[in-house]
Image (cartoon, rainbow, N blue to C red; front, side):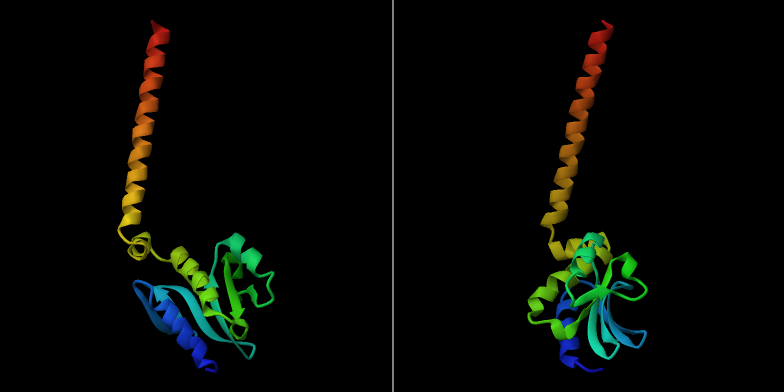
Length: 149
């Protein structure tokens, strides 16, 4: 494959994420979290491209940039391809790959990346909502009893 430096850059970004691996899929290198593809690198119409999944609104916006287009077959699900020759700064690619990873990876795996604080924060938020619901339910019950009296 031409552009092995592109593959090297993608490896550095993708394989630094938790529970990832590189596989050869459809004759091209792809990166998986568990068994699900979150990014790829290959050739399309004679040019080296990289691909990843984005939130649909983000995908719709980013394809306005001529370096990006909807990926064949899966573009309708938020997958985009990028002309790797248009990459000036790989630090701009990293957040796109991380977004894809977050969309594809299981929640537990994403939590590993975020560290233990994030799940604890979610638990605290859930507990706060539960307490708020109980308080609201308690007030509603008191109001209902007061109306009956």
